Length: 492
Image 1: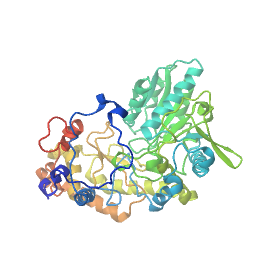
Image 2: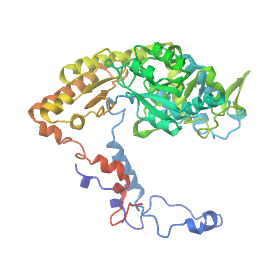
Image 3: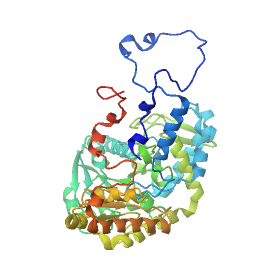
Image 4: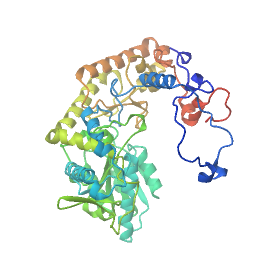
C-alpha cells in the first residue's frame, strides 16, 4: 500500500459537500464581529476539506486501523510503561456521575467524586510512604515542576536562598528542564561503574546552595540505587530535599516505599503505573505526594474529609497556588482508583511479574547485544547496539525500524544518553512469555540480518504503510502534512 492508496482528507474534498445538515436557527443571528471583534476575524475562509459524512467516517476509520496501540500489540517502550489497560477501568471512568460531572459543581453535589479522590489519596500515601497528595498536575513533568515549586517555597520560608538542583546523568530529560523552569541552576552528577549515582561526586556537589536532588529510583538504566539511604543522608546533610521521579514506580509497588527510603516528595505517573497507557501523548495525570514538611505548600484546593462529608479546601495560606484548573485529568484518576481497588494486596505481584519479565527478556537478548551494566535489572533494561554499528555499520535506529517489519513497535532508543546506541526495553507485567519469546526472536533475527544483509536493515521498514520518514523534518515542520492541494505557506 502506498500513500496514493490512502488519500489525505483534502483529496476527498469536493466543493459544496457537507458532513452534516443542520436546521435553520430559531434564534436571532448575531454577527460574529460583535462577539470577538472585527479585527480578529480571518479575511479568507479556512482551508478545510468539504466531504460527506460517509467519506469522513470511512477516512478516519481506515486511519484508526493503521495505528499501533496497546490493544493491537506489544509496546516494549523503556521508561514509558505501556501495559494493558483493563477495560473495567474504562467502564468506571465512563460512569455518567464521573464522566458528566461539571468541574464547577458545588462540593455538596460532587460528593462521589470528592470521596473517590480522598480514598485514592489514602491509597497512594500508603503505597508511597508519603503523607499527602495533590492531584492537580496533568502529567509527570508537570508533577516535577509542582514539586520543585513546593521545595522552593519551603526554603524561601526559612530565608534559605538556594540556587542549585542536582540531577544525575541517568535522569529523565524533563528533570533538568523542570529545574531550570523553576529558576534553578542544574548540576549534573555522573553514574558509577555499576550504574548508581556516584557518591563521591554527589558529596562534592552537595553544599548549602543545593535545594534538592532529583533522582529516579529505579533509575533510567533500569537499576535500583544500591546506596539509596546513603544518598538520602548526603542530601539531607546539606539541608536539601530529596525528590523522586516516580516514572519507574511500577518496579517497586508493594516491595519498598520511597518515603521509607528517605524521599521527601515524589510524583507518580498514574497514567502508566495504575492504568491508562499514555500512547499518543496523553492523557496523563501526575499526582505529587509529599512528606509532612511540605504539606503546607500543596497546591489548592486539597480534598478534605469532615465526618461523612468531603470538601475542597482553598484556605491554605502557604500554598504555591493552583498549578492547573480543577483536579487534573479526573478520568485518569478514576481509572487509577479502579485499578488499585481491583489489585488491593496483590499489588506487589504487579512489580514482581514486571521485574521477572524484564530479567527474562534481558537474559534472552544478552548474547546478541552489549550489556553496559550487567547486573539484575528491575522492570526495564538497557542494551547497546554499538557492536552492530562497529561491525556492520547498522545503527540502533535501523534496528528499531526493521522491527516494524516483524509487527512489533520499536523499543525506546538513544536513551538514556549515557549509553552509546542505547536500546531500552520494558516488557511490563502484562505481557505473556509467548509474546516476549516472539519479540526476542524477531530482535535476534534482525541482528542476524545486520551481519548477512545490513543494507536491508539500513533501509527498513519495507512492509509498513510508509517507508523511512524524515523524522527531523516532521518534528520541526509538523504542519507540512496538512497543506491542502495548492495551499501556500504552513497550511490551515
